[in-house]
Amino acid sequence: MNIGISGSYGGLNLGDEAILQSIIMKLEEDLDASIRVFSRNPEDTLERHRVDRAIDVRRLSVKEILPEIEELDLFILGGGGILYDSEINHYLREVKLARDRGIPVMLYGIGAGPLRKSSSQKLLRDSLGENTVITVRDRNSQKVLEGLGIETEIHVTADPALLLPSENLENEVPEIVHMDKKRKIVGFSVREPGGAAPGINEDVYHDILANAADYIIDRLDADILFIPMESNKRDQQHSHAVISLMQKPQHATVLKGKYTPGQLLSIMDRFSFAVGMRLHFLILAALKSIPLVGLPYSPKVEHFLEELGLVIPPMRLVNSGRLIAYIDSFWDKKAEIRRTIKKKIPELQARAGENHRILMDFIRSGFKSGGL
Image (cartoon, rainbow, N blue to C red; front, top):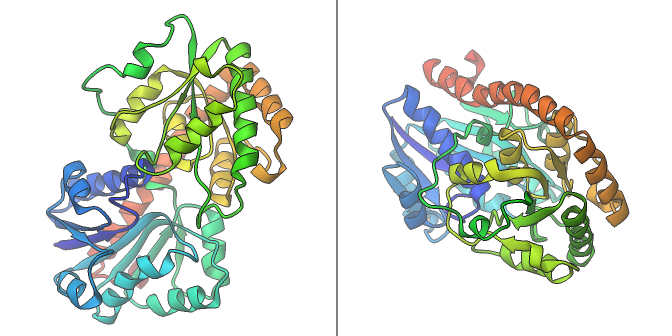
């Protein structure tokens, strides 16, 4: 089979690369397939993943991309939170081209919203139809799509990255090597404002995280390691901005090397606790059963924390004192939280595996979505 996969790939977001790695891993288990990825950075995609081709999707015109689409037996969009107003045009272009040519389409473990523009809503409705299967990673995405009048059945699963395996580190991590072996390590994650996070006020959250980091340094006798999930963009800048506001910046550093998502899992073996904004940082921490506090800047983060039983108010309602109170409470309950996460993760992984099962049922049915 010729299978095309498109999403936020090649952009050096390690959460998205974890999703793609997990999708490819499951496909390889059950299919003899030629896989091509529609990527924003084909060279990076070919370096990271075992795929046959990578197409520079953002550079090519419709006329140039059509031959790549027409050779496909199946087109997969996803996963990740890619269906929102400022980006939806980019991601649905190939979906619509495939659908118009009778090529079966699967939306695979996606996140949806916010979709407030009528043009975005119409484009989504026009891009879906017969021979289409949809799985979403959370109930909020299901509600968003149902609210737009999408008639195709929407299956609620979980994020494909929950199936990511650990990978061995080739060398020791310099930032950890230079830390005091007697002190704990706490992982931190930030993210930049943007289309996927329109409500973030960086001046406010920088100050909140700086205060929380200083508290953790004293309370837990710990050092802070910031993990940039988008290392080539602004995660590093925002991490350094938080450190610049800390009273004890000598106990904080930013991870600088180039690592795979699976290698990040191995790095997290050293963490005693985690505080983060980015969804996939929190997913990776949970895969290691690390007690964590998340900052829910969007419904996707709120939903994941609810799944773990670690409910925290939306970020707009959190100040320094409130965040520190949660950190203090969760640290005191760390053994209980670790047990809870260990219990919850297998359930979430089973649901994440449903994405692939539904895909295989779609293929075996002859691409008849009604046969699932």
